Image 1 (cartoon, one colour):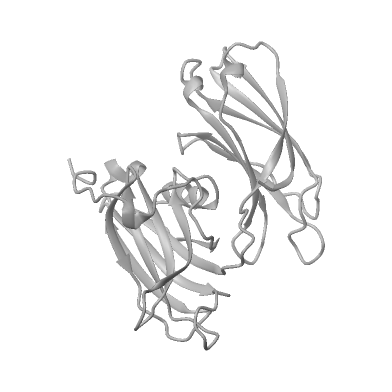
Image 2: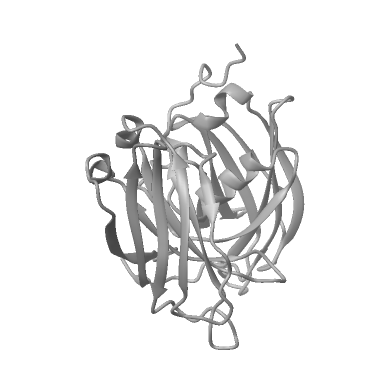
Length: 294
Protein backbone atom coordinates (compact mmCIF):
# COMPACT_ATOMS: atom_id res chain seq x y z
CA UNK A 1 0.00 0.00 0.00
CA UNK A 2 1.24 3.46 -0.85
CA UNK A 3 1.90 6.04 1.82
CA UNK A 4 1.31 9.80 1.85
CA UNK A 5 3.77 10.96 4.48
CA UNK A 6 3.89 10.37 8.22
CA UNK A 7 1.80 11.48 11.19
CA UNK A 8 3.35 12.16 14.59
CA UNK A 9 0.97 12.01 17.57
CA UNK A 10 0.94 11.17 21.27
CA UNK A 11 -1.53 9.38 23.57
CA UNK A 12 -2.12 9.34 27.29
CA UNK A 13 -5.00 8.08 29.40
CA UNK A 14 -5.95 10.37 32.29
CA UNK A 15 -7.74 8.33 34.97
CA UNK A 16 -8.75 11.40 36.97
CA UNK A 17 -10.89 12.84 34.19
CA UNK A 18 -11.58 9.44 32.56
CA UNK A 19 -10.36 10.64 29.22
CA UNK A 20 -8.03 9.66 26.40
CA UNK A 21 -5.72 12.60 25.71
CA UNK A 22 -4.74 12.75 22.04
CA UNK A 23 -2.06 15.18 20.86
CA UNK A 24 -1.79 15.70 17.12
CA UNK A 25 1.80 16.92 16.87
CA UNK A 26 2.81 17.15 13.24
CA UNK A 27 2.70 15.64 9.76
CA UNK A 28 5.68 15.18 7.50
CA UNK A 29 6.28 14.84 3.76
CA UNK A 30 2.65 15.28 2.72
CA UNK A 31 1.92 15.05 -1.02
CA UNK A 32 1.27 18.08 -3.19
CA UNK A 33 -2.47 18.43 -3.78
CA UNK A 34 -2.84 22.01 -5.09
CA UNK A 35 -1.82 23.62 -8.38
CA UNK A 36 0.31 25.99 -6.28
CA UNK A 37 2.64 23.07 -5.54
CA UNK A 38 1.60 22.65 -1.91
CA UNK A 39 -1.36 21.58 0.27
CA UNK A 40 -3.62 23.04 2.97
CA UNK A 41 -3.74 20.12 5.42
CA UNK A 42 -5.80 19.50 8.53
CA UNK A 43 -6.59 16.37 10.54
CA UNK A 44 -9.87 14.87 11.74
CA UNK A 45 -9.64 12.54 14.75
CA UNK A 46 -12.23 9.85 15.50
CA UNK A 47 -12.54 7.50 18.45
CA UNK A 48 -14.45 4.66 16.86
CA UNK A 49 -16.80 2.91 16.65
CA UNK A 50 -18.61 5.75 18.47
CA UNK A 51 -19.25 8.20 15.62
CA UNK A 52 -20.05 11.07 18.00
CA UNK A 53 -16.46 11.31 19.21
CA UNK A 54 -14.74 13.51 16.61
CA UNK A 55 -12.34 16.47 16.62
CA UNK A 56 -10.60 18.53 13.95
CA UNK A 57 -7.36 20.51 13.89
CA UNK A 58 -6.88 23.93 12.34
CA UNK A 59 -5.99 24.20 8.64
CA UNK A 60 -2.34 24.94 7.87
CA UNK A 61 -2.07 26.87 4.61
CA UNK A 62 0.52 25.86 2.00
CA UNK A 63 2.44 23.47 4.22
CA UNK A 64 3.64 19.95 3.47
CA UNK A 65 5.19 19.56 6.95
CA UNK A 66 2.58 21.16 9.24
CA UNK A 67 3.13 21.41 13.00
CA UNK A 68 -0.27 21.14 14.66
CA UNK A 69 0.46 20.75 18.39
CA UNK A 70 -3.23 20.45 19.23
CA UNK A 71 -4.66 18.42 22.11
CA UNK A 72 -8.07 16.71 22.23
CA UNK A 73 -9.71 14.74 25.02
CA UNK A 74 -12.13 11.88 24.37
CA UNK A 75 -14.35 11.03 27.34
CA UNK A 76 -14.16 7.27 27.63
CA UNK A 77 -13.99 4.91 30.58
CA UNK A 78 -10.88 2.86 31.27
CA UNK A 79 -12.69 -0.41 30.51
CA UNK A 80 -14.32 0.84 27.29
CA UNK A 81 -10.99 1.98 25.90
CA UNK A 82 -10.08 -1.62 25.09
CA UNK A 83 -12.96 -1.77 22.58
CA UNK A 84 -12.16 1.54 20.88
CA UNK A 85 -9.72 2.47 18.12
CA UNK A 86 -8.44 5.75 16.72
CA UNK A 87 -8.66 7.03 13.18
CA UNK A 88 -6.79 10.08 11.91
CA UNK A 89 -8.00 11.39 8.53
CA UNK A 90 -5.65 13.88 6.87
CA UNK A 91 -7.41 16.26 4.47
CA UNK A 92 -6.41 18.97 2.02
CA UNK A 93 -8.68 21.98 2.54
CA UNK A 94 -10.35 23.39 -0.60
CA UNK A 95 -12.30 26.62 -0.36
CA UNK A 96 -14.26 25.99 -3.56
CA UNK A 97 -15.15 22.29 -3.46
CA UNK A 98 -15.21 19.24 -1.22
CA UNK A 99 -11.97 18.69 0.69
CA UNK A 100 -9.66 15.95 -0.63
CA UNK A 101 -8.76 13.03 1.62
CA UNK A 102 -4.96 12.73 1.55
CA UNK A 103 -4.83 9.56 3.62
CA UNK A 104 -5.48 7.92 6.96
CA UNK A 105 -3.85 6.45 10.04
CA UNK A 106 -5.72 3.81 12.04
CA UNK A 107 -4.48 2.70 15.47
CA UNK A 108 -6.56 -0.35 16.32
CA UNK A 109 -4.84 -1.46 19.51
CA UNK A 110 -5.22 1.00 22.39
CA UNK A 111 -4.30 -1.49 25.12
CA UNK A 112 -1.06 0.39 25.80
CA UNK A 113 -3.20 3.34 26.83
CA UNK A 114 -4.99 1.40 29.55
CA UNK A 115 -2.03 0.97 31.88
CA UNK A 116 0.68 3.49 31.12
CA UNK A 117 1.28 6.51 33.32
CA UNK A 118 3.29 8.48 30.82
CA UNK A 119 2.58 9.86 27.38
CA UNK A 120 3.46 7.58 24.48
CA UNK A 121 4.45 9.04 21.11
CA UNK A 122 3.72 7.39 17.76
CA UNK A 123 4.99 8.07 14.26
CA UNK A 124 2.92 6.16 11.71
CA UNK A 125 2.65 6.07 7.93
CA UNK A 126 -0.31 7.88 6.43
CA UNK A 127 -1.92 5.35 4.11
CA UNK A 128 -3.12 6.75 0.79
CA UNK A 129 -6.83 7.25 0.39
CA UNK A 130 -6.88 5.13 -2.75
CA UNK A 131 -4.35 2.64 -4.09
CA UNK A 132 -6.05 2.03 -7.42
CA UNK A 133 -3.74 2.88 -10.32
CA UNK A 134 -6.44 2.67 -13.00
CA UNK A 135 -8.25 5.93 -13.68
CA UNK A 136 -11.92 4.96 -13.73
CA UNK A 137 -13.31 8.44 -13.18
CA UNK A 138 -15.20 10.05 -10.34
CA UNK A 139 -18.75 10.10 -9.03
CA UNK A 140 -20.41 12.85 -7.00
CA UNK A 141 -22.91 11.61 -4.43
CA UNK A 142 -25.04 13.40 -1.84
CA UNK A 143 -26.34 11.83 1.37
CA UNK A 144 -29.21 12.98 3.55
CA UNK A 145 -30.83 11.18 6.48
CA UNK A 146 -34.14 12.05 8.16
CA UNK A 147 -34.14 10.27 11.56
CA UNK A 148 -37.81 10.85 12.42
CA UNK A 149 -39.02 9.60 9.04
CA UNK A 150 -36.38 6.85 8.87
CA UNK A 151 -35.51 7.90 5.32
CA UNK A 152 -32.07 7.72 3.72
CA UNK A 153 -31.68 9.61 0.44
CA UNK A 154 -28.70 9.04 -1.84
CA UNK A 155 -28.65 11.55 -4.68
CA UNK A 156 -26.53 10.60 -7.67
CA UNK A 157 -25.48 14.04 -8.88
CA UNK A 158 -22.99 13.52 -11.71
CA UNK A 159 -19.87 11.69 -12.87
CA UNK A 160 -16.77 12.75 -14.77
CA UNK A 161 -13.98 11.15 -16.79
CA UNK A 162 -15.61 7.72 -16.89
CA UNK A 163 -13.95 4.84 -18.70
CA UNK A 164 -14.57 4.39 -22.43
CA UNK A 165 -16.43 1.10 -22.83
CA UNK A 166 -17.79 1.16 -26.42
CA UNK A 167 -16.02 0.95 -29.77
CA UNK A 168 -17.31 4.47 -30.41
CA UNK A 169 -15.05 5.74 -27.62
CA UNK A 170 -17.96 6.44 -25.29
CA UNK A 171 -20.21 4.67 -22.77
CA UNK A 172 -23.85 4.38 -21.73
CA UNK A 173 -23.49 4.62 -17.94
CA UNK A 174 -26.04 4.19 -15.19
CA UNK A 175 -25.60 3.87 -11.43
CA UNK A 176 -26.85 0.95 -9.35
CA UNK A 177 -27.00 1.25 -5.56
CA UNK A 178 -27.28 -1.62 -3.09
CA UNK A 179 -28.45 -1.13 0.48
CA UNK A 180 -26.74 -3.61 2.81
CA UNK A 181 -27.59 -4.36 6.41
CA UNK A 182 -25.04 -6.30 8.46
CA UNK A 183 -23.43 -7.38 5.18
CA UNK A 184 -26.64 -8.67 3.60
CA UNK A 185 -28.34 -7.11 0.61
CA UNK A 186 -31.71 -5.57 1.44
CA UNK A 187 -32.66 -3.52 -1.59
CA UNK A 188 -31.25 -2.16 -4.85
CA UNK A 189 -32.14 0.85 -6.96
CA UNK A 190 -30.70 2.41 -10.11
CA UNK A 191 -30.64 5.61 -12.09
CA UNK A 192 -31.57 6.16 -15.71
CA UNK A 193 -29.07 5.37 -18.49
CA UNK A 194 -27.16 8.27 -20.03
CA UNK A 195 -26.41 7.41 -23.66
CA UNK A 196 -23.01 8.16 -25.17
CA UNK A 197 -21.63 10.10 -22.23
CA UNK A 198 -18.42 9.97 -20.16
CA UNK A 199 -19.39 12.85 -17.84
CA UNK A 200 -23.11 12.29 -17.26
CA UNK A 201 -25.34 14.49 -15.10
CA UNK A 202 -28.04 12.54 -13.24
CA UNK A 203 -29.43 14.58 -10.32
CA UNK A 204 -31.55 11.56 -9.36
CA UNK A 205 -32.56 10.81 -5.77
CA UNK A 206 -32.73 7.17 -4.61
CA UNK A 207 -34.67 6.83 -1.36
CA UNK A 208 -34.36 3.96 1.12
CA UNK A 209 -36.39 3.29 4.26
CA UNK A 210 -33.91 2.95 7.15
CA UNK A 211 -35.35 3.21 10.69
CA UNK A 212 -33.20 5.15 13.14
CA UNK A 213 -32.55 2.05 15.24
CA UNK A 214 -30.99 0.32 12.20
CA UNK A 215 -28.95 3.16 10.70
CA UNK A 216 -25.74 2.04 12.45
CA UNK A 217 -25.98 -1.36 10.71
CA UNK A 218 -26.41 -0.30 7.07
CA UNK A 219 -24.02 0.58 4.27
CA UNK A 220 -24.20 1.29 0.55
CA UNK A 221 -22.44 -0.28 -2.41
CA UNK A 222 -22.45 1.93 -5.50
CA UNK A 223 -21.64 0.63 -8.97
CA UNK A 224 -21.33 2.52 -12.24
CA UNK A 225 -22.35 0.19 -15.06
CA UNK A 226 -22.20 0.47 -18.85
CA UNK A 227 -25.52 -0.47 -20.42
CA UNK A 228 -25.33 -2.81 -23.42
CA UNK A 229 -28.48 -3.45 -25.42
CA UNK A 230 -27.11 -6.63 -27.01
CA UNK A 231 -24.51 -8.12 -24.68
CA UNK A 232 -24.15 -8.11 -20.92
CA UNK A 233 -23.75 -4.89 -18.98
CA UNK A 234 -20.20 -4.19 -17.76
CA UNK A 235 -18.94 -2.76 -14.49
CA UNK A 236 -17.13 0.56 -15.00
CA UNK A 237 -16.20 1.24 -11.39
CA UNK A 238 -17.53 1.14 -7.85
CA UNK A 239 -17.29 2.61 -4.37
CA UNK A 240 -18.78 2.07 -0.91
CA UNK A 241 -20.29 4.21 1.82
CA UNK A 242 -20.77 3.31 5.47
CA UNK A 243 -19.21 3.14 8.92
CA UNK A 244 -17.70 -0.29 8.17
CA UNK A 245 -15.37 1.05 5.48
CA UNK A 246 -12.05 2.85 5.99
CA UNK A 247 -11.75 5.92 3.83
CA UNK A 248 -13.83 8.70 2.40
CA UNK A 249 -16.97 6.53 2.45
CA UNK A 250 -16.87 6.32 6.24
CA UNK A 251 -16.12 10.03 6.70
CA UNK A 252 -18.98 10.99 4.38
CA UNK A 253 -21.35 8.66 6.25
CA UNK A 254 -20.38 10.02 9.66
CA UNK A 255 -20.76 13.59 8.42
CA UNK A 256 -24.27 12.75 7.23
CA UNK A 257 -25.20 11.30 10.63
CA UNK A 258 -23.78 14.35 12.38
CA UNK A 259 -25.90 16.65 10.19
CA UNK A 260 -29.42 15.16 10.08
CA UNK A 261 -31.81 16.58 7.47
CA UNK A 262 -28.93 18.31 5.67
CA UNK A 263 -27.64 17.07 2.27
CA UNK A 264 -23.89 16.41 2.27
CA UNK A 265 -22.14 16.02 -1.11
CA UNK A 266 -18.84 14.27 -1.84
CA UNK A 267 -16.74 13.27 -4.86
CA UNK A 268 -15.68 9.60 -4.98
CA UNK A 269 -12.82 8.11 -6.98
CA UNK A 270 -14.13 4.95 -8.61
CA UNK A 271 -12.17 1.73 -8.10
CA UNK A 272 -12.23 -1.75 -9.60
CA UNK A 273 -13.10 -3.45 -6.32
CA UNK A 274 -14.53 -2.47 -2.94
CA UNK A 275 -11.87 -1.90 -0.29
CA UNK A 276 -12.09 -4.34 2.60
CA UNK A 277 -12.91 -7.35 0.39
CA UNK A 278 -16.68 -7.00 0.79
CA UNK A 279 -18.41 -9.76 -1.19
CA UNK A 280 -19.98 -8.81 -4.49
CA UNK A 281 -23.46 -7.46 -3.88
CA UNK A 282 -24.95 -9.84 -6.44
CA UNK A 283 -23.66 -12.76 -4.36
CA UNK A 284 -24.99 -11.57 -1.04
CA UNK A 285 -28.12 -13.25 0.32
CA UNK A 286 -31.21 -11.10 0.67
CA UNK A 287 -32.37 -10.46 4.22
CA UNK A 288 -35.82 -9.10 4.95
CA UNK A 289 -35.53 -9.13 8.73
CA UNK A 290 -32.67 -6.73 9.27
CA UNK A 291 -34.50 -3.48 8.69
CA UNK A 292 -37.53 -3.80 10.90
CA UNK A 293 -39.33 -1.11 12.80
CA UNK A 294 -39.64 -1.98 16.44
